[in-house]
Image (tube, rainbow, N blue to C red):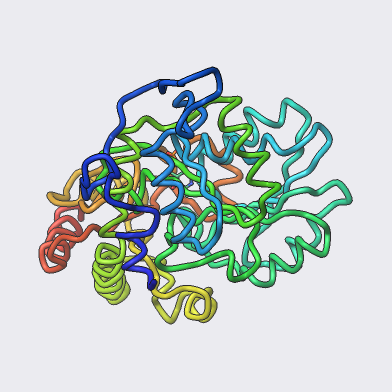
Amino acid sequence: MRFATKAIHAGVEPDPATGAIMTPVYLTSTYAQSAPGQHKGYEYSRSDHPTRAVLERNLASLEGVEYGLAFASGLAAENAVLSLLQPGDHVVATRDLYGGTYRLFERVWAKYGIEFSYADGDDLDALRRAFRPNTKLLWVETPSNPMLSIVDLRAVCELAHAHGALVVVDNTFATPYLQQPFEFGADIVVHSTTKYLGGHSDVVGGALCLRDRGLYEQLKFYQNAAGAVPGPLDCFLVLRGIKTLALRMERHCENARRIAEYLAQHPEVKQVRYPGLPTHPGHELACQQMRDFGGIVTMELHGGVERAMRFLSSTRLFTLAESLGGVESLMCHPATMTHASVPPEERARIGITDALIRLSVGVEDVEDLLEDLEQAIKKSR
Ligand SMILES: *Cc1c(COP(=O)(O)O)cnc(C)c1O
Protein backbone atom coordinates (compact mmCIF):
# COMPACT_ATOMS: atom_id res chain seq x y z
CA MET A 1 0.00 0.00 0.00
CA ARG A 2 1.13 3.53 -0.70
CA PHE A 3 1.10 6.26 1.94
CA ALA A 4 -2.33 7.86 1.44
CA THR A 5 -3.95 4.40 1.34
CA LYS A 6 -2.14 3.26 4.48
CA ALA A 7 -3.21 6.41 6.28
CA ILE A 8 -6.83 5.35 5.80
CA HIS A 9 -6.58 1.55 5.99
CA ALA A 10 -3.46 0.34 7.81
CA GLY A 11 -4.41 -1.51 10.98
CA VAL A 12 -8.09 -0.64 10.48
CA GLU A 13 -10.66 -3.43 9.95
CA PRO A 14 -14.44 -3.17 10.06
CA ASP A 15 -15.53 -3.90 13.64
CA PRO A 16 -15.92 -7.70 13.94
CA ALA A 17 -19.01 -7.37 16.15
CA THR A 18 -21.06 -4.92 14.03
CA GLY A 19 -19.23 -4.23 10.76
CA ALA A 20 -18.81 -0.56 11.74
CA ILE A 21 -16.43 1.07 9.25
CA MET A 22 -15.04 3.51 11.76
CA THR A 23 -12.96 2.14 14.64
CA PRO A 24 -15.24 1.97 17.70
CA VAL A 25 -14.40 4.09 20.73
CA TYR A 26 -14.38 1.38 23.38
CA LEU A 27 -15.27 3.20 26.58
CA THR A 28 -14.26 0.49 28.99
CA SER A 29 -11.56 0.16 31.60
CA THR A 30 -11.79 -3.62 31.96
CA TYR A 31 -12.80 -6.85 30.16
CA ALA A 32 -14.66 -10.01 31.15
CA GLN A 33 -12.63 -13.14 31.84
CA SER A 34 -14.24 -16.59 31.60
CA ALA A 35 -11.71 -17.95 34.11
CA PRO A 36 -8.72 -16.16 35.66
CA GLY A 37 -6.43 -15.20 32.77
CA GLN A 38 -8.93 -16.39 30.11
CA HIS A 39 -9.86 -13.39 27.94
CA LYS A 40 -9.98 -12.11 24.37
CA GLY A 41 -6.62 -10.32 24.50
CA TYR A 42 -7.61 -7.42 26.73
CA GLU A 43 -7.47 -7.30 30.53
CA TYR A 44 -7.26 -3.70 31.63
CA SER A 45 -7.20 -0.55 29.50
CA ARG A 46 -3.93 0.88 30.79
CA SER A 47 -2.17 -2.27 29.53
CA ASP A 48 -3.95 -2.68 26.19
CA HIS A 49 -6.96 -1.07 24.61
CA PRO A 50 -8.67 -1.93 21.31
CA THR A 51 -9.03 1.65 19.96
CA ARG A 52 -5.43 2.38 20.97
CA ALA A 53 -4.23 -0.86 19.38
CA VAL A 54 -5.62 0.24 15.99
CA LEU A 55 -3.91 3.63 16.30
CA GLU A 56 -0.61 1.98 17.26
CA ARG A 57 -0.72 -0.37 14.25
CA ASN A 58 -1.64 2.50 11.95
CA LEU A 59 1.21 4.75 13.17
CA ALA A 60 3.78 1.95 12.89
CA SER A 61 2.69 1.28 9.33
CA LEU A 62 2.99 4.96 8.36
CA GLU A 63 6.58 5.02 9.63
CA GLY A 64 7.27 1.73 7.86
CA VAL A 65 8.06 -0.30 10.99
CA GLU A 66 6.57 -3.06 13.13
CA TYR A 67 5.75 -1.37 16.39
CA GLY A 68 3.84 1.67 17.60
CA LEU A 69 3.04 2.88 21.11
CA ALA A 70 0.57 5.67 21.83
CA PHE A 71 0.91 8.02 24.80
CA ALA A 72 -1.13 10.74 26.48
CA SER A 73 1.07 13.48 24.97
CA GLY A 74 4.21 13.95 22.93
CA LEU A 75 6.13 14.65 26.12
CA ALA A 76 4.83 11.46 27.73
CA ALA A 77 6.22 9.57 24.72
CA GLU A 78 9.57 11.37 25.09
CA ASN A 79 9.61 10.62 28.80
CA ALA A 80 9.26 6.91 28.03
CA VAL A 81 12.35 7.06 25.80
CA LEU A 82 14.38 8.73 28.56
CA SER A 83 13.38 5.92 30.94
CA LEU A 84 15.70 3.66 28.91
CA LEU A 85 18.69 5.49 30.44
CA GLN A 86 20.62 4.86 33.66
CA PRO A 87 22.21 7.44 35.98
CA GLY A 88 25.56 8.43 34.46
CA ASP A 89 24.34 8.07 30.87
CA HIS A 90 24.79 10.94 28.45
CA VAL A 91 22.55 12.29 25.68
CA VAL A 92 23.62 14.43 22.73
CA ALA A 93 20.79 16.57 21.37
CA THR A 94 20.48 19.01 18.52
CA ARG A 95 20.51 22.49 20.03
CA ASP A 96 17.36 23.79 18.39
CA LEU A 97 14.75 21.69 20.22
CA TYR A 98 11.09 21.97 21.13
CA GLY A 99 11.14 23.97 24.40
CA GLY A 100 9.23 21.28 26.32
CA THR A 101 11.81 18.67 25.32
CA TYR A 102 14.59 20.89 26.64
CA ARG A 103 12.63 21.38 29.89
CA LEU A 104 12.07 17.61 30.24
CA PHE A 105 15.82 17.03 29.82
CA GLU A 106 17.09 19.78 32.09
CA ARG A 107 14.42 20.10 34.77
CA VAL A 108 13.19 16.52 35.08
CA TRP A 109 15.87 14.02 34.02
CA ALA A 110 19.11 15.91 34.74
CA LYS A 111 18.49 15.55 38.48
CA TYR A 112 18.50 11.76 38.14
CA GLY A 113 22.09 11.88 36.91
CA ILE A 114 21.45 11.89 33.15
CA GLU A 115 23.72 14.34 31.33
CA PHE A 116 22.74 16.33 28.25
CA SER A 117 24.92 18.14 25.70
CA TYR A 118 23.74 20.22 22.78
CA ALA A 119 25.27 20.85 19.38
CA ASP A 120 24.04 22.47 16.19
CA GLY A 121 22.26 19.79 14.21
CA ASP A 122 23.63 21.05 10.91
CA ASP A 123 27.25 20.96 12.15
CA LEU A 124 28.43 17.33 11.98
CA ASP A 125 31.83 18.12 13.52
CA ALA A 126 30.21 19.80 16.50
CA LEU A 127 27.91 16.81 16.95
CA ARG A 128 30.87 14.43 16.73
CA ARG A 129 32.76 16.40 19.37
CA ALA A 130 29.77 16.24 21.72
CA PHE A 131 29.90 12.42 21.94
CA ARG A 132 31.44 10.83 25.03
CA PRO A 133 32.13 7.21 25.97
CA ASN A 134 28.86 7.20 28.01
CA THR A 135 26.67 8.68 25.24
CA LYS A 136 23.64 6.43 24.85
CA LEU A 137 21.25 8.56 22.76
CA LEU A 138 21.40 11.10 19.98
CA TRP A 139 18.21 13.18 19.98
CA VAL A 140 17.39 14.92 16.71
CA GLU A 141 14.71 17.30 15.47
CA THR A 142 14.56 17.97 11.74
CA PRO A 143 13.22 20.36 10.57
CA SER A 144 13.92 21.90 13.94
CA ASN A 145 11.62 24.05 16.01
CA PRO A 146 11.51 27.02 15.47
CA MET A 147 14.54 27.66 13.22
CA LEU A 148 13.72 24.90 10.69
CA SER A 149 17.32 23.70 10.44
CA ILE A 150 17.79 20.47 8.54
CA VAL A 151 19.85 17.65 10.02
CA ASP A 152 21.50 15.09 7.73
CA LEU A 153 19.72 12.01 9.06
CA ARG A 154 21.88 9.43 7.29
CA ALA A 155 25.11 11.06 8.49
CA VAL A 156 24.03 11.50 12.11
CA CYS A 157 22.70 7.93 12.31
CA GLU A 158 26.09 6.64 11.11
CA LEU A 159 27.86 8.87 13.61
CA ALA A 160 25.70 7.77 16.56
CA HIS A 161 25.82 4.08 15.67
CA ALA A 162 29.62 4.23 15.42
CA HIS A 163 29.53 5.37 19.07
CA GLY A 164 27.03 2.66 20.02
CA ALA A 165 24.26 5.20 20.66
CA LEU A 166 20.63 4.99 19.57
CA VAL A 167 19.10 7.71 17.39
CA VAL A 168 15.79 9.28 18.38
CA VAL A 169 14.13 11.45 15.74
CA ASP A 170 11.30 13.80 16.68
CA ASN A 171 9.33 13.61 13.42
CA THR A 172 6.50 15.89 14.56
CA PHE A 173 7.20 18.73 12.11
CA ALA A 174 7.70 16.56 9.03
CA THR A 175 5.23 13.72 9.77
CA PRO A 176 5.83 10.36 8.09
CA TYR A 177 4.22 11.80 4.96
CA LEU A 178 7.20 14.10 4.37
CA GLN A 179 10.04 12.17 6.00
CA GLN A 180 10.70 8.55 6.99
CA PRO A 181 13.55 8.55 9.53
CA PHE A 182 13.85 4.73 9.66
CA GLU A 183 14.98 4.76 6.00
CA PHE A 184 18.05 6.68 7.15
CA GLY A 185 18.79 4.45 10.15
CA ALA A 186 16.80 5.97 13.04
CA ASP A 187 16.05 3.66 15.99
CA ILE A 188 13.12 5.48 17.60
CA VAL A 189 10.68 7.98 16.09
CA VAL A 190 8.80 10.31 18.44
CA HIS A 191 5.60 12.17 17.59
CA SER A 192 3.43 14.75 19.17
CA THR A 193 0.19 13.55 17.55
CA THR A 194 -1.31 16.79 18.89
CA LYS A 195 0.10 18.49 15.79
CA TYR A 196 -0.23 17.36 12.15
CA LEU A 197 -1.24 13.76 12.81
CA GLY A 198 -4.32 14.80 14.80
CA GLY A 199 -4.45 17.84 12.58
CA HIS A 200 -7.52 19.60 14.00
CA SER A 201 -6.29 21.10 17.29
CA ASP A 202 -8.81 19.01 19.21
CA VAL A 203 -6.61 16.46 20.98
CA VAL A 204 -3.30 16.13 22.84
CA GLY A 205 -1.39 12.92 22.19
CA GLY A 206 1.98 11.34 21.51
CA ALA A 207 3.51 8.23 20.02
CA LEU A 208 6.68 6.21 19.55
CA CYS A 209 7.45 4.05 16.53
CA LEU A 210 10.06 1.30 16.72
CA ARG A 211 11.68 -1.31 14.51
CA ASP A 212 13.50 -3.32 17.19
CA ARG A 213 11.45 -5.81 19.16
CA GLY A 214 13.61 -5.59 22.30
CA LEU A 215 13.28 -1.81 22.43
CA TYR A 216 9.55 -2.10 21.82
CA GLU A 217 9.19 -4.52 24.72
CA GLN A 218 11.08 -2.24 27.10
CA LEU A 219 9.00 0.77 26.09
CA LYS A 220 5.73 -1.17 26.11
CA PHE A 221 6.60 -2.24 29.65
CA TYR A 222 7.18 1.41 30.60
CA GLN A 223 3.95 2.53 28.91
CA ASN A 224 2.00 0.16 31.16
CA ALA A 225 4.16 0.57 34.26
CA ALA A 226 4.14 4.39 34.25
CA GLY A 227 0.67 4.62 32.73
CA ALA A 228 0.69 7.80 30.60
CA VAL A 229 -1.74 6.29 28.09
CA PRO A 230 -4.22 8.17 25.88
CA GLY A 231 -7.95 7.69 26.36
CA PRO A 232 -10.12 5.93 23.76
CA LEU A 233 -11.68 9.11 22.36
CA ASP A 234 -8.24 10.70 22.00
CA CYS A 235 -7.07 7.66 20.04
CA PHE A 236 -10.15 7.88 17.82
CA LEU A 237 -9.55 11.58 17.11
CA VAL A 238 -5.93 10.97 16.11
CA LEU A 239 -6.95 8.03 13.90
CA ARG A 240 -9.60 10.15 12.21
CA GLY A 241 -7.13 12.99 11.71
CA ILE A 242 -4.59 10.66 10.09
CA LYS A 243 -7.09 9.62 7.41
CA THR A 244 -6.64 13.02 5.73
CA LEU A 245 -2.95 13.49 6.58
CA ALA A 246 -1.71 13.20 2.99
CA LEU A 247 -4.31 15.67 1.68
CA ARG A 248 -3.68 18.15 4.47
CA MET A 249 0.11 17.99 4.21
CA GLU A 250 -0.02 18.69 0.48
CA ARG A 251 -2.03 21.84 1.13
CA HIS A 252 0.04 22.89 4.17
CA CYS A 253 3.19 22.64 2.04
CA GLU A 254 1.68 24.45 -0.94
CA ASN A 255 0.38 27.30 1.23
CA ALA A 256 3.59 27.59 3.24
CA ARG A 257 5.67 27.77 0.06
CA ARG A 258 3.51 30.62 -1.29
CA ILE A 259 3.76 32.49 2.00
CA ALA A 260 7.54 31.98 2.30
CA GLU A 261 8.01 33.28 -1.26
CA TYR A 262 5.79 36.28 -0.55
CA LEU A 263 7.67 37.12 2.67
CA ALA A 264 11.08 36.58 1.04
CA GLN A 265 10.45 39.37 -1.50
CA HIS A 266 8.76 41.72 1.01
CA PRO A 267 10.86 44.84 1.76
CA GLU A 268 9.60 45.00 5.37
CA VAL A 269 10.63 41.45 6.16
CA LYS A 270 14.10 41.11 7.66
CA GLN A 271 14.42 37.33 7.37
CA VAL A 272 12.36 34.29 6.42
CA ARG A 273 13.27 30.71 7.16
CA TYR A 274 11.64 27.94 5.15
CA PRO A 275 13.46 24.80 3.98
CA GLY A 276 11.73 25.10 0.60
CA LEU A 277 13.48 28.38 -0.21
CA PRO A 278 16.69 27.84 -2.21
CA THR A 279 18.36 30.39 0.10
CA HIS A 280 17.76 28.17 3.17
CA PRO A 281 21.09 26.57 4.25
CA GLY A 282 19.46 23.12 4.49
CA HIS A 283 17.52 23.31 1.23
CA GLU A 284 19.59 20.73 -0.71
CA LEU A 285 19.46 18.27 2.17
CA ALA A 286 15.72 18.81 2.58
CA CYS A 287 15.27 18.01 -1.13
CA GLN A 288 17.09 14.70 -0.57
CA GLN A 289 15.44 13.51 2.63
CA MET A 290 11.96 15.06 2.55
CA ARG A 291 9.09 14.75 0.08
CA ASP A 292 8.21 18.42 0.54
CA PHE A 293 9.11 21.17 3.00
CA GLY A 294 6.31 21.35 5.55
CA GLY A 295 3.86 23.94 6.80
CA ILE A 296 5.95 26.03 9.21
CA VAL A 297 7.53 29.34 8.23
CA THR A 298 9.65 31.42 10.62
CA MET A 299 10.13 35.13 10.03
CA GLU A 300 11.27 38.42 11.43
CA LEU A 301 10.04 41.87 10.42
CA HIS A 302 12.18 45.01 10.36
CA GLY A 303 11.41 47.10 13.43
CA GLY A 304 12.39 44.76 16.25
CA VAL A 305 10.33 43.43 19.10
CA GLU A 306 7.80 46.32 19.24
CA ARG A 307 6.95 45.79 15.58
CA ALA A 308 6.66 42.04 16.16
CA MET A 309 4.24 42.63 19.05
CA ARG A 310 2.10 44.96 16.92
CA PHE A 311 2.08 42.40 14.11
CA LEU A 312 0.99 39.61 16.48
CA SER A 313 -2.08 41.62 17.48
CA SER A 314 -2.92 42.77 13.94
CA THR A 315 -3.76 39.56 12.11
CA ARG A 316 -7.35 38.45 11.54
CA LEU A 317 -6.95 34.87 10.34
CA PHE A 318 -3.64 33.84 11.91
CA THR A 319 -4.46 33.32 15.60
CA LEU A 320 -1.83 33.87 18.26
CA ALA A 321 -1.67 30.52 20.07
CA GLU A 322 0.66 27.75 21.19
CA SER A 323 0.78 24.61 19.03
CA LEU A 324 0.88 24.04 15.31
CA GLY A 325 -0.16 21.60 12.62
CA GLY A 326 -3.92 22.16 12.72
CA VAL A 327 -6.10 23.01 9.72
CA GLU A 328 -6.30 26.63 10.95
CA SER A 329 -3.38 29.03 10.66
CA LEU A 330 -1.69 29.91 13.95
CA MET A 331 1.30 32.03 14.89
CA CYS A 332 3.47 32.17 17.95
CA HIS A 333 6.21 34.20 19.59
CA PRO A 334 8.80 31.53 20.47
CA ALA A 335 10.81 33.71 22.90
CA THR A 336 7.87 34.12 25.29
CA MET A 337 5.70 31.14 24.34
CA THR A 338 7.01 27.77 23.08
CA HIS A 339 10.64 28.47 24.01
CA ALA A 340 10.20 30.51 27.20
CA SER A 341 11.78 27.67 29.21
CA VAL A 342 14.99 27.88 27.15
CA PRO A 343 17.41 30.31 28.88
CA PRO A 344 17.98 33.63 27.02
CA GLU A 345 21.70 32.89 26.27
CA GLU A 346 20.74 29.55 24.77
CA ARG A 347 17.92 31.18 22.76
CA ALA A 348 20.40 33.74 21.42
CA ARG A 349 22.82 30.98 20.33
CA ILE A 350 20.02 29.26 18.45
CA GLY A 351 18.87 32.49 16.78
CA ILE A 352 15.55 32.83 18.59
CA THR A 353 15.44 36.62 18.81
CA ASP A 354 12.68 38.48 20.65
CA ALA A 355 11.36 39.59 17.26
CA LEU A 356 11.07 36.09 15.81
CA ILE A 357 7.61 34.91 14.73
CA ARG A 358 6.66 31.33 13.86
CA LEU A 359 3.77 30.77 11.48
CA SER A 360 1.90 27.47 11.33
CA VAL A 361 0.32 27.78 7.93
CA GLY A 362 -3.11 26.14 7.77
CA VAL A 363 -5.10 24.76 4.87
CA GLU A 364 -7.29 27.81 4.26
CA ASP A 365 -7.37 29.52 0.84
CA VAL A 366 -3.86 30.90 0.53
CA GLU A 367 -5.10 34.18 -1.00
CA ASP A 368 -6.92 34.94 2.26
CA LEU A 369 -3.79 34.12 4.25
CA LEU A 370 -1.62 36.37 2.05
CA GLU A 371 -4.12 39.23 2.39
CA ASP A 372 -4.14 38.80 6.15
CA LEU A 373 -0.33 38.92 6.37
CA GLU A 374 -0.21 41.96 4.08
CA GLN A 375 -2.73 43.93 6.13
CA ALA A 376 -1.03 42.97 9.40
CA ILE A 377 2.41 43.99 8.09
CA LYS A 378 0.94 47.37 7.05
CA LYS A 379 -0.97 47.86 10.28
CA SER A 380 2.08 47.06 12.43
CA ARG A 381 4.29 49.75 10.83
C1 LIG B 1 4.42 19.87 20.59
C2 LIG B 1 5.70 19.19 20.40
C3 LIG B 1 6.16 18.23 21.31
C4 LIG B 1 5.42 17.92 22.60
O1 LIG B 1 4.21 17.31 22.36
P1 LIG B 1 2.91 17.47 23.32
O2 LIG B 1 1.89 16.66 22.60
O3 LIG B 1 2.61 18.93 23.42
O4 LIG B 1 3.30 16.90 24.65
C5 LIG B 1 7.36 17.60 21.05
N1 LIG B 1 8.08 17.89 19.94
C6 LIG B 1 7.68 18.80 19.04
C7 LIG B 1 8.52 19.07 17.84
C8 LIG B 1 6.49 19.49 19.24
O5 LIG B 1 6.10 20.41 18.34
